[in-house]
Image (cartoon, rainbow, N blue to C red; front, side, top):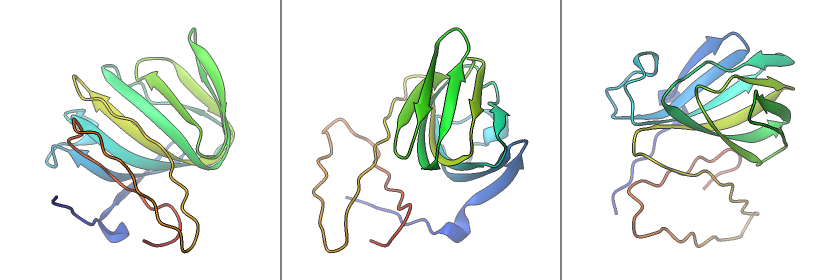
Length: 149
């Protein structure tokens, strides 16, 4: 198994209307979020305003997990969901989406035939975890939100 360790100093952080976003990984690696020419993208965001409107991203499927804080996410004509720490919501990028509340979140964006899921794994100090990877998995990313591994 090959692996790559990407340290915090390599991440790209930019501002958006509601706070900041940090790109953790984009594939293919020469793609650009602004051009929407990626297959998948992993990022975190800090929502620093009480009410925010999500960028419309037609053709892109999104998954979001709250890491800190909490939000009420509303997808007009679809569903609303209260998200607390480690809760996940899935939605399409062309849905009119707004949120109320402040948080730090983790995001997976995919296009085309690419799929994926995000889950939280909580490992206490001096504990070990044995994570089973499915045979059809091409990529596995581990984002260490707090602590060390």
